[in-house]
View: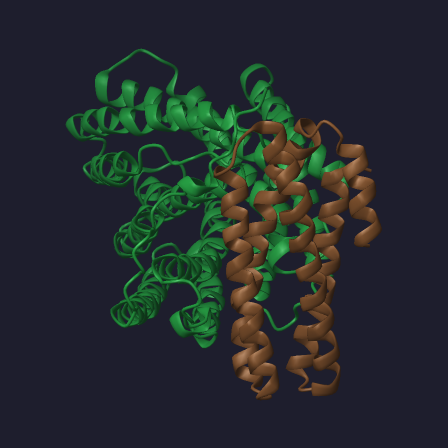
Length: 419
Length: 144
């Protein structure tokens, strides 16, 4: 028998917002790191921006969204908000900083040891969340996808911790086998989370048609099995072009999503071009993949693939999501604090449409500068400057939203005393 | 067909009405907006009444719970009713910007509410309400 969902125990406002703020703040060290990289892959100088982006920017944003989504989509109550807000959040930031500093210090073991210790508690907490999610009464495609995505995040962390055990603690494990598996699991986590989110967000907020039924039912599992086939190929048949299998669902997902977005009945919606840009970059990633056959692991191709997935596809979606979620959370918090029938200013008071449209223009500018960095990694400063400009825009817009929220909060009449 | 598929289809029908209303407001086609707004609010009111007076009561009787998810859903219905009042007020004043802003807010509130119902509450109704088939027949008589 299913548990009763607890919609009245959604996370407090400060929980996801704290993760979102941290995500934006990590753009600054990410920009600085682009000036340090020589762009070779695999190389420490490329691992630094890669992990700042994956753990600092995207990791924080996705964790904040995940904590909010499991409450709304799957009805899993937030049992320990203070734990997630203070302990897990702080450990995640410290562990990311420690890991990246360790990379910067040419794999200095003390920093890697510290990072491995700091990541343990967040991993244990996420395991608890996965357990709660597994017991959720929700059986829809999105909730199934969220479970698989969280499972892959834990696998990614486990493989990452195993590599830290080799590099930091001197364990005699096969580092070169662990690295591609860690990369595959990380790609799986990002894609599965987006697939789970897209199934809900596109039809509901962009008023598109639904993803085809077979995709909703089997898409996540198809992607998971492809990753597994890719991992097996890596392990047992290293000469076999395993990546065809691992990336087939990705191309399918990009095409399905781009076609779906054309059915949107909200052409004026500012979120729509974010999604179009994001999935166009995913399609570009799928188009670049066959080049691996001829180019092997050429450094420029490794940079291009990493950028398309993380800096292009995922970052664009995350920025759009922040502009949609944060003003709504502020509005909802205000509405719940106001007495019944009190008129609350609409969402656009907190975030006028022009704000996300400006950031979209900045993201459009970021893409050719990223292409320049892919081609000439020694010319990283234009991309770094564009990312700093994006951070400034995000800061300006969200500080303005917080000011509007505080102003509206100050003029709220007191709640009537309950009987 | 079960309660989940029927009530999710009602949500999609309300979405259709909402999308048409938004387009009419965007084009400042006020005559069309008047008709579409009345139709949208009527469909929503009927759907809320079906849920509050039949579905939630049946679920509460089946599970013995009085607060929890159904109380949250009723509270969110109330929030949406207030926004629909704002929508009608903006429409009377022919305030296109005000309506667009209220529509934006209503859409997000409406869809996160639908998500909770379609993913969890309706499937729970299907599995917990003993005479779900009869209830479905009753609901199909009053809504499309």
